[in-house]
Image (tube, rainbow, N blue to C red; front, top):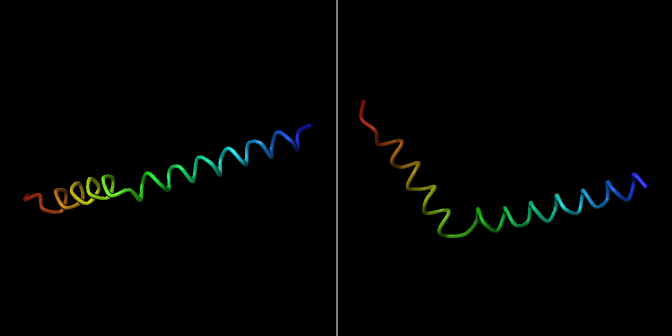
Length: 45
């Protein structure tokens, strides 16, 4: 029974990774990350 549980966990992890990949590669998230990085690099000390 443990093998079936590991298989279900693996499938769930792959599905979560696929959703996360789609979210991170969306244009809105890329724009937000780009803005955050640009703002952080342009801070004058």
